[in-house]
Amino acid sequence: MEIKGFTYGYDGREGDYRSEAGKLSQERLFETGVNWICLCFTVEQDNIFSRTIPFRFGENVTDRDLMAVIENAHEHGVKVCLKPTLNSRDGIWRARIAFPDNGQLGEDRYWDEWFEAYGAFMLYYARLAEETGCEMLCVGCEMCGTENRERQWRELIAGIRKAYGGKLSYNTNHGHEFDVRWYDAVDYVGTSAYFPVGSGGCSTADGMAERWKDVCRQMKEVHERWGKPVLFMEIGCRSAQGCSAMPWDFEHKELPHDEEEQAAFYESCLRVFSEEEWFAGCFWWDWSSTIYDTPEDAAAENGFNIHLKKAEQVLKEWYAKL
Image (cartoon, rainbow, N blue to C red):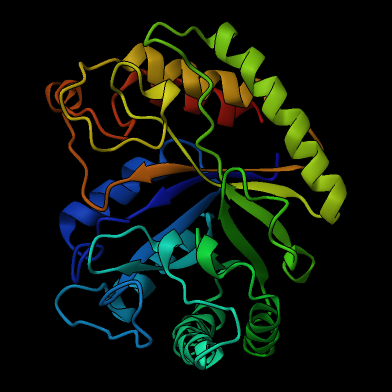
């Protein structure tokens, strides 16, 4: 498994990465044995029908923030995937960003305008990734409503290749791996691997592993279809009861704390996928830009973070032997 990774800083805002708390969080992340981090940060368009992508100072992380984390990672011998992520300010999931494409009323113009804005956004960060020596760039995350626009995506990627010499990935959502007809244009078939492998809040690592085996067979078919390594650009499970059956969930705050289930999710996935030669690895979701640092705080935290939880020890043991 080439990529022993974790996602860092999705919640970050201007200055967070460079703060003392941010630096401490990064140190704690490096202690897990990662050899890659995915530096995921967000910029928002106003709504899912917008065709402009503004940069909002005071909200978005700045170039200085990104450069500080990249430099820190490289000083620790950790490679970086830069993942600029577009969200919609109206709260609707980015996968719903889309325009009609039935060829009437000039809808293609809307698509061209959006891709012009998105291409400029992504090209800006491609140049930053090149200048800072990032080893990978993710050109999009869960943009399912746009994925059928093959011509525009191929043109966008070709433009990025002229500005950036590292590896490229694209991050679809699980279940869409066969739908992206232009995966041959990037280096990794990336997916958000929130596969529901648990059931009823009482799942064991052995039980989840059986379900991961089915996923593994599907992902091998994906690899064979595209001839590219499969990369779990996102994968994770909250430390809350029942979340292995809905690992994408972040809304059910009432669920009781459950580190065992989260740890079993990690253990079962790594057990099944770690020896597959076509499998590139994981960027686990996610490590906060500033992290709690006491066992008491960990016991009260039911999110995706694993610091000072049982899943952290599972990850450390696997990453030490891979």
